[in-house]
Image (cartoon, rainbow, N blue to C red; front, top):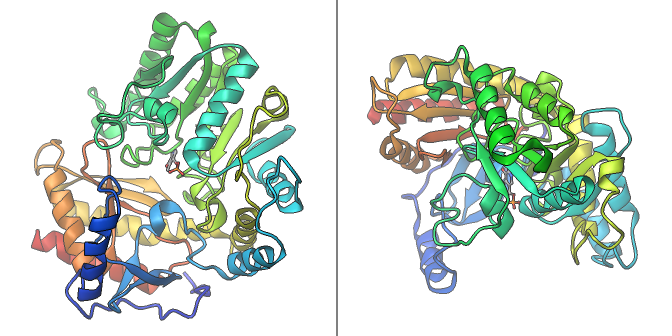
Length: 449
Ligand SMILES: *Cc1c(COP(=O)(O)O)cnc(C)c1O
């Protein structure tokens, strides 16, 4: 791996100069507790001051190696040069007109780029929104009006957001849904091919899971009632689950045979994260609709639904939109982010990150019985922690490991239906030294565990 420009002048080094959290962060945390609703949680209780390249600096002067990218968002690094340049120019020109009132070129240009970059060479159109959840909701609106059907099929361990409809689409109760019902109707959940936890083992997982899912859709919902099947090609919040090979193509084929809109939710897995522009390319899948957000705009809020022009056009004029959707500054940032991804060939970069990280994670798994599984692709990698000698989830060890990494200056995130997955989502521009130093910390934290 050769080093890439950091995009900011922040020293690319880990530095721990206070206890974590330091005194200034503790003061700010007291203010947060007094002024910010408790529902807005904190993974690592330090306050950010600056971030760029592969590091995040806190208000006490500590510098953390960033294995989180703000949850897979700053793939091009924080304050990436092209993002700042284009967003700044747009800020100075105008900040908002509302695309539904007076359109502007950056919105159109983002949709043109999305048509080029997403899988398939059919005619495509896009609509832009503010958040991933909003994109998923709009994909459902579009699929329903196109098919004149109501049912939506989602999968075990799926995550699609925190709005009312997307809570219904999301699998995990605590913390996403608990106490927040009632949820939207006509949502049906079916099995996913989760190789590590498939009861009969990983070998026939794809076939058996697809057969079960299709049987449930056909018999319990009725394929003719289904507007959309929505799946993450690599499941994010559910625990970085890569469905066993063959599962996704079978489900996509079933959707096609039955006139169901197949939606790939690539909000976390898209935009170079898995070593390809979009994770569904891995098995040659061409979704009817694809939802994107997170990595699209280098940290500014932007999301999109992109898909077959005839499906996208089935919603009537005025039926899709919102005051801020496709804000010009966010669009300019997205164009800067895409420019960076192309210029630095970030899909290849994600593959190089996998080449550095995955063998080391696999070696750690051999040495530490607490690691039950190593999985993921590109710079979307994870370890699943279990009670040694079993497959029983070990969320306690996962939380302790994360805390220990934080204290040594490594920002890691946990996830998973059972809270027992540690995920690694470094910015794709991180230097190889930082990547290895981060893994050294993980290794010593595992040994201390
Ligand atoms: C994060 C995420 C969402 C929700 O995106 P928000 O911008 O938080 O609303 C939806 N789907 C997937 C796969 C995600 O990872």
